[in-house]
Amino acid sequence: LKIVRTIEEMRAERRHLKKVGLVPTMGAFHEGHLELMRQAREKSGSVVVSLFVNPTQFGPSDDFHKYPRQEARDAEMAESVGVDVIFAPSPEEMYQRPHTKVCVEGAAEGYEGDFRPGHFDGVATVVLKLFDIIQPTSAFFGLKDLQQCAVIRQMVRDLNVPVRVELIETVRETKGLALSSRNKYLTTDQRSYATSFSEVLKSAAQSAGLRGTPIHEAVHWAKSDLIRRGFEVDYVAMVDAETMRPSVIPDEKTRIVAAIRYEGVRLIDNFPVPLKK
Ligand code: PAF
Image (cartoon, rainbow, N blue to C red):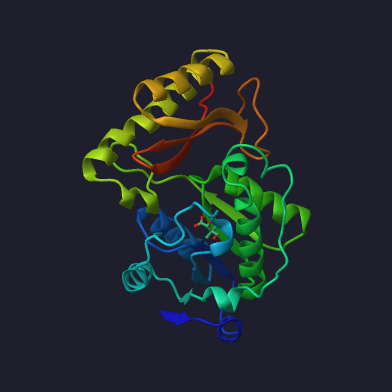
């Protein structure tokens, strides 16, 4: 495993690599990241992981400074699943001031876009930069960040970026809580309580998909149940996972998405809406 820190070094390294699978990350690896790396390993000639806590996707009151950083441990974990190169630049290496931003209209609007203004401009900008620097054949993203996946797919389509975007299903703790680097902010007991977040979403998705409950009723039930359990709800909705437009009747692209705050930690999750066979 090689760790490179400058764009020039990364470009030099790239010349020796074939059919690169890129896994863009902000570090603090967990099983969800490792699954993306394993998939990249399986489907690519070589695997590059970017490890960069991207300042431009954090708002002024977000957790940029306290975001977990553990590069040495991350490098060991990446090596254990066969990653070839880690690209870990500094913010100064990545950004001049002022700099160009990528703004994705459509998929970036609403939901996370409303609660985290500017977040998706930061994500789209850094991902496009990583694509240009690393020139991967494919790039692997976790479906836990459903709207991020929609934003990146739209950007790739709109800007004719020659990268195949692979979306990988969320990895969960045994009881169902979606793995996230931010789960580190919760105690074991709090994490255990937070599993009811995913349980409520899953029940609402099943109710709309399998029992024919109208979407607005299933969403209303989920919201009320989450509030009753003491979570602060930012949003719950059923959307088309490709466009992030609200779904009216469930189809194979419909997913329930939600964001809550619990003990000062913001959690997001989503599930497919299963359809009657
Ligand atoms: O999902 C993440 O970790 C980040 O948003 C990403 C895609 C690495 C961009 O900084």
